[in-house]
Amino acid sequence: MELVVHVNSTICGFIHIIKGKLDGKNIIIDIESPCTKIKEMSHMEVPIMQTLDIKDNYVMDMAQKAHCCPGCIVPIGILHICKLESGMLAKSLAKQVEVMTIEFKEG
Image 1 (cartoon, rainbow, N blue to C red):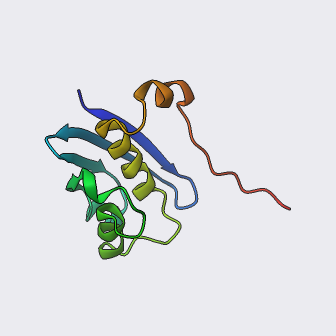
Image 2: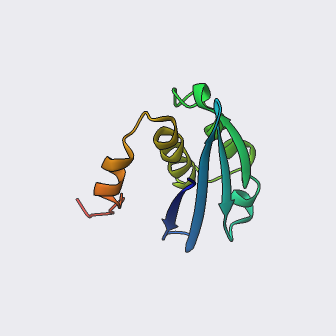
């Protein structure tokens, strides 16, 4: 069964639909997005073992090649799908939490 995540990038005004599915040692990622930069990342075969470290990371490398903004939350959404599909993060926990947010507050 394919996992679907909606990433709402409210700062740039885009909603991205990310779909992921485990295929052997890879996670197949497809993205529907109005963002031209994210469209460059729209089909990826992400090696599970290249998602374990934030510095040496396939998804972050692809985001850099697509010239994503440093604050773009789509790569993090992709990494969460990879963690869920590989079993490193419980789908039941994600279903229970359902929404992750970044809130901007004045200090």
